[in-house]
Length: 130
Ligand SMILES: *[C@@H]1O[C@H](CO)[C@@H](O)[C@H](O)[C@H]1NC(C)=O
Ligand SMILES: *[C@@H]1O[C@H](CO)[C@@H](O)[C@H](O)[C@H]1NC(C)=O
Image (cartoon, rainbow, N blue to C red; front, top):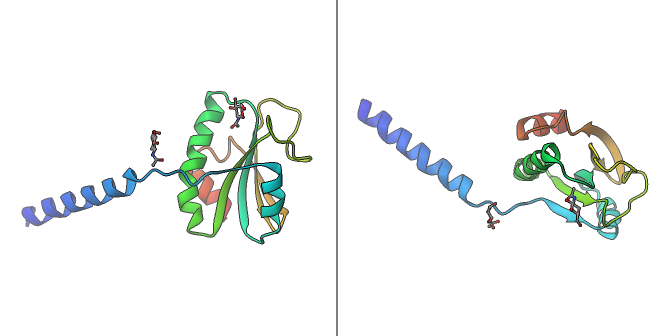
């Protein structure tokens, strides 16, 4: 009996290791043109608009990258727009530290979030899908 549990745990471990090795990021970085084009596609997008990165925002972007896989399963693409290089009226605001993330469908904002609210993968997924 104990032997079976051991093998089971070993199998689980090697399986989850496989899952975490392929770390190709699914986070897309949009240019302004790209953004407007994608907004016409009818897909859902979860997009962070940012400029400067402090440690908190850096962590958030890491979590955003990680959530891309999970959200893709629900047909939602995760993207980032760097407002230092691109200017998108309405979403690229004057602040240097931007803390807004938006969920879009058909070019409309369905919901907006503060980066403090969607601070990790679980929070991102549950807020976006709610
Ligand atoms: C995986 O992540 C590491 C460290 O973040 C990076 O250097 C490497 O290029 C990534 N691999 C892929 C396939 O994205
Ligand atoms: C935007 O780009 C600048 C450099 O072009 C970089 O320093 C900054 O970290 C980027 N911001 C985000 C949110 O990716």
